[in-house]
Length: 235
Image 1 (cartoon, rainbow, N blue to C red):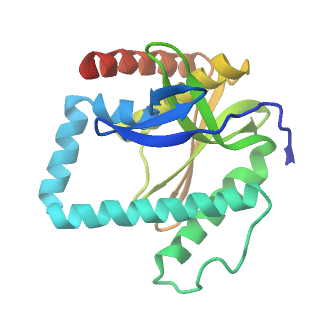
Image 2: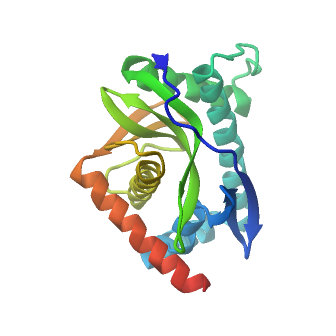
């Protein structure tokens, strides 16, 4: 894989406004993609999350969320280090019970099974994607590059168990890909036609999910509907 820095990504800063994450980018304050998706969840998704929290208990659900968030941060950092050629093999303790070591193994799985065989070009890592205007939004894509010969927006995910095509969370991931690809194409004049999800489970199962062409456009439009709903709620 090679680097091709053909897009000029701006710097951004984050802030919390009215309980939602916003980005300050190019002299605009825009709500984040994740905040928009969170505030506009479907009733079924809200009910499913509430049922899970009730089933495992409030304290346990909070512990699981915090552990997953920390593990996800570590995993993303390891993948980013690899892509930026600053990989440090001694970054994590070699302890099977250590969450950082688990995150390292999950990152290695995504690198070995997802990135090394299929990623031919890197355009940017942690790329700011924003959509200007009165109903604007912004976010940070894990990776923009050429995946299996197609210009793509690529996100890294981690999960406690395998992902199934029928899961609503996968539809959310695809909608997120729609948001980033739409913003990137509009702002940078790119031609991203594919969204790729590279996922590792805690028991080290690798999964890849793709959405492309007309299907990706469908998810771009689905996200725009969520944007309209978001602004109707907050205004």
